[in-house]
Length: 409
Image 1 (tube, rainbow, N blue to C red):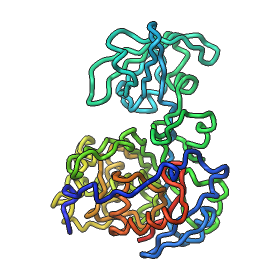
Image 2 (cartoon, one colour):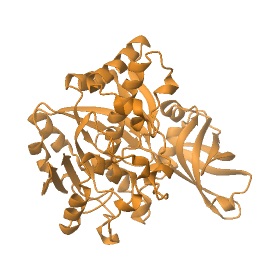
Image 3 (cartoon, rainbow, N blue to C red):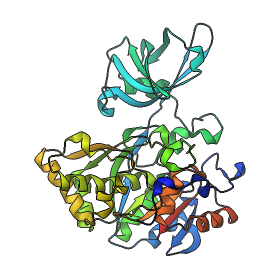
């Protein structure tokens, strides 16, 4: 290990990003975006529809199939004050699918907009969902860091919490777009393959894919597989500390099926990741597998990947092949009669990290001084400035609705 990533200065990962380079809206046709190619140190460009031309037949491509939920709910107090309740993650029940199916009560960890105007009392909102009138109430409980435990209750057992969000929730587009959510965002801020509800931000590298490009990849002989990582609002949290040691990574929930694990093993533990969320999930799998090789009976809570776990001496010294680590997870699923691994990760991937599974990635252009820029730098062995200088000088569009890149170190 060349350096201790905890002492990296985030100021070294800054670059000038003028507001006009941030794409406020997507292109009318998703797959017509520009594609920056970084291959073994060389930078060039093409158009996204050409992506299959640059991938070898027989490779495995992994997508994150999470679906963005309409997580923002607005309540108006009797005083006229508008309060925004932004659902971050489920607490009671803490399983996403179960929580969405609740019919009278659901508790979530939420961020509150205009908190100073909501000192006490219950917020209420009359609504009609699926033709059924109901009153939705929100009650504030204890504080968890910058978020609050919120109890939602509604008086119609025929309506689920998912129904309420679907009708009255608003899609949370990234704060740096500096605009209101528009009706078009409901479609354009979801990947065409999104399935599993739970994210409060889109895995944006996937926004460029169309059925046409997915078909072209299959025709090329690229194997397509999916996993799930629910993206949290922490993905937009800037690094405020001078050294990254002071930055706490948010926890995100992952789910990977036995089939996907077996497909990874069949591809010798190597994959092309679509988006940094897929990257973090795949690399977390490696460290979960190492945990299980060291302790096959590890309880479920020990499978959570801690922020600095990959950099601990035991992890750094373990030259365990990816296939062995993945096989250990399949063995764990066998012993517990499970079809999928459900766990969480806080992994931070920064310069000094050794990649184990991801051999190429498709990703957008990230904010200055962000943990995602650290992840990219670690992948391209510190060459990120060459990539970003090219993108800035060749009219690439940045951030969530911006253009794409294919990185092959």
